[in-house]
Amino acid sequence: MEFADVVRRRKMVRSYTDEPVDPAAVERALAHAVRAPSAGFSQGWGFLVLDTPDDVRRFWVATVKDEIDDPDEWLTGMMPAPVVIVPCSSKAAYLGRYAEPDKGWSDQDEARWPVPFWHMDAAMASLLILQTAVDEDLGSCFFGIPPESEAAVREEFSIPVVFDPVGAITIGHPATTVGAKGSPSRRRRKDLEEVVHRGRWTTTD
Ligand SMILES: Cc1cc2nc3c(=O)[nH]c(=O)nc-3n(C[C@H](O)[C@H](O)[C@H](O)COP(=O)(O)O)c2cc1C
Image 1 (cartoon, helix red, strand yellow):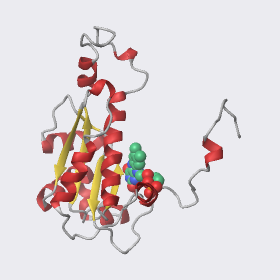
Image 2 (image 1 turned 90 degrees about the vertical axis):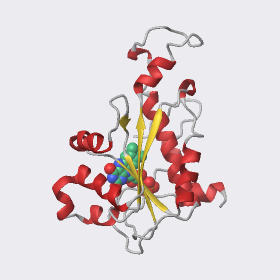
Image 3 (image 1 turned 45 degrees about the vertical axis):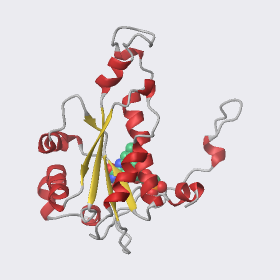
Image 4 (image 1 turned 45 degrees about the horizontal axis):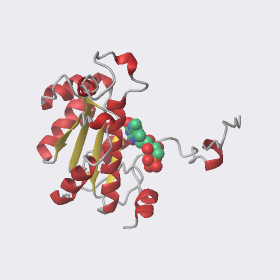
């Protein structure tokens, strides 16, 4: 598929069939994920891959708890996806990497970081997973793990304390039914003129 088509066709899919996903497609998505850039080449990411019905169910039980028995439209559409990937980031890996001799400082002061690059890098890797799904004619959706469920997900899958899940990604074959919508449908993609500021910032509102 042309790269521009991958970019244009990518959208979050929130309704899946339970048709299995070719494991090779998941491997390609992961192989692409680790091609993402990372600050200081820290690569402080980890990817929990859940690709059996039992593991995927354990993910949903840990994430939504009792709601699993009375799922809303969103959950009903998402749960059949045969693959869930949980991208995680390690702040410690970045603080440690930037304290190495080829970097500018030796302390591990978090205040030196303009934004949390550890989360940024996991997000960049996540986008490559989403784009690979498009290229494989699959659907995918990045979504947040509710803060109140994070401990249960960690515990269920033995995620080490030095790693933080930044969200989760479903991968599967899109159902023909539309499924839950994301943001309200009245929201539209902003025009370039609204978000691009050439030469100087131009305020439009
Ligand atoms: C950081 C992040 C968190 C998101 N969290 C959720 C979520 O919890 N549930 C959900 O259904 N979609 C979630 N989305 C998907 C957005 O709603 C979606 O990207 C946005 O509405 C634009 O639609 P599109 O990606 O299909 O173009 C998230 C996206 C991002 C980038």
